[in-house]
Length: 362
Image 1 (cartoon, rainbow, N blue to C red):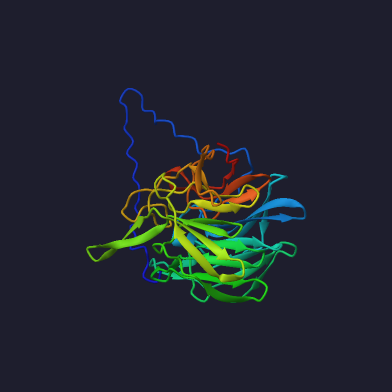
Image 2: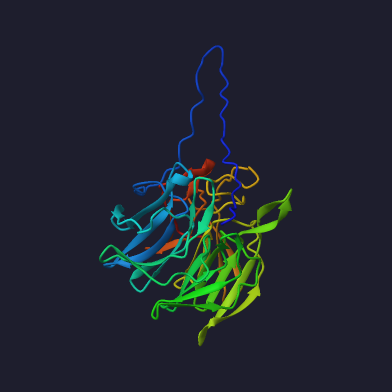
């Protein structure tokens, strides 16, 4: 992002209200999306999210992201925890960075949560990919700075393997997408590279990992230039990687058929060992900037689609739509036998505080 994906028209959407001569009444406003679960204390989108059993109860965590104003000064350092059983939110210590972050990723592993990367936005729109790695300890509500990401990325995906390794696949690095697969060894505290991602390098893609299989789908790529400016678009792709259990740096990749519903940007994804599936929900068909407005000026709208892939039988499956269409997610969160999104954007690019439960039933 150094040379920003921006250049962005922070398009203002004007509203024109027709006045009726006989009765000057304003048409009723549509109700905002609703959820039966307690909303976040503060709406956040593009927030790093993870789920972890804490003291025997499932807890969903949110770190950083974008607040409702959707301006550069609305980047957040806030963190929250949601007790699924009690339906209760708690505000946590903020992430110890000097300014907020967008497009960071989080992974729960071995009783802690690891936070990676993200980007900052300056008043002039300049964007910087950040290298920070933190381990958050729920027991003490503290953060520990770990070894920086060798090639700082944002809008990447993070996948945990064997309760030890965390894979960062592709993403945006300063001024372009990268094919690099960077692996953090949580036991040794060191980074190494795995086999490069062979697909089109992207940001805002989605993925999940089950057993030795990781799946990466879609995302936004640079598709060329128009009048000297880069043109961004969502690409349809699905790449399945099989990790060599004897060598975590060795990934055998091959392309599989796409999910068929049209490519998505910033959908939520996760792997479920219990179900033997990699699942996806939400997202948008539009490549957009952090404010929800497309790079071509088109306002993005969210999807309600829920679908999954069985890597053992090479089979795509479609499930009932999620209750509230949403986009701008970093992960789908398993808890209590279901899957959840927290925050994100709902219709008309509204930054949301909603908790949405997905049962992934056909």
